[in-house]
Image (cartoon, rainbow, N blue to C red; front, side, top):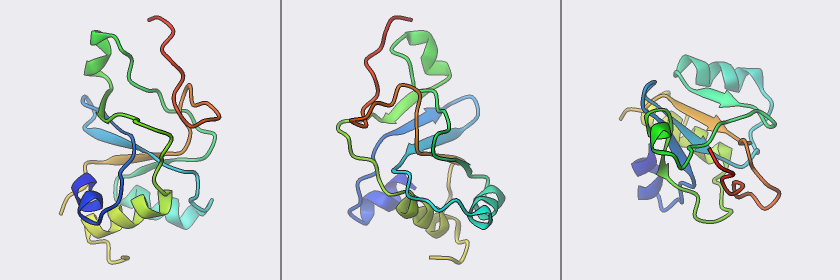
Length: 126
């Protein structure tokens, strides 16, 4: 999915991996409609959507955390892709007929430590 978005000249924004569950989390702008049919469609594709205001734990700088969470694309600026574009990419990659394989993504609009400027807070010890 990351490659699909990059091939279409779309920035992917921050992505983190959950190695033990084989899932990726895409941090996006909270522009998805609060629509149960969209959430049901994504659920059938094994995609979890964390609604605006939900909590997503970020990778820790400690070595031990890499077995739980790690950055695929670390945040480099305040950019977050549109949630709608990520959903469109999921549909295209899964052949769901709406717009090759997705690795069980999670789409999240708000993360633990997210600040008003859109960047995660600096780590505060482990």
